[in-house]
Image (cartoon, rainbow, N blue to C red):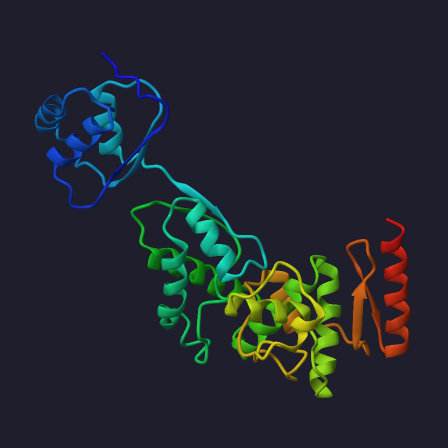
Length: 302
């Protein structure tokens, strides 16, 4: 007679478990009635070995049905969505929320596993910037290292597809800033041009997202940026220190990487939101200030 689990039952069968241990775990979870019957069935019909993994049981099934699923390796897969621009802190939380491990372990390995990128980013202190935004499917028997390696592999594949094979570290840092500054793909080459123009004249980038990242690293970010935050003493504070920050401030997507590689040719040095999801660009401080006034007029009417 089939056994009906009460609600969803997840059972994790780890590599190396004996048939008896597997049967015991299934019985403890009330997925099967008899561990003995399960083991006997396996020994008389063991055409296939039982597969390790996490299984979801949410409907009635006989011991034979359950055995067939475990022999088939019908394991449960966790979907992990990483949007463009997510930081390692964001990804760590998403990993934990997906039931794939603790965010603390994830963040520790982001520093410990930098050998994954040491050939392309020899000065990197973490995997920030190289965990490519995408939708991944992982199982709970995969290690955290395996997950990180899969994300880095995806970065390498995208980088190769767009010809990113030189100055990788600088390109990823720039792309991470571009990614955080605008969600509008067609604006990204323009944002890139602003920052490259500033770098060429040794003008501080003054990128707000870099200040936020400095505070994320320090654990002091309060959810919004205040004027006094612009004085934070960090190499990531692009208001205090000219040049690129020492590392990426998030994980950029393909179009931001392309913008960093191929910026628009402009004489822009400033940009500000237009209040409607896009930006106004300017080549002089006077024009920029006028754009700021326009932004205030738009926001004050709401």
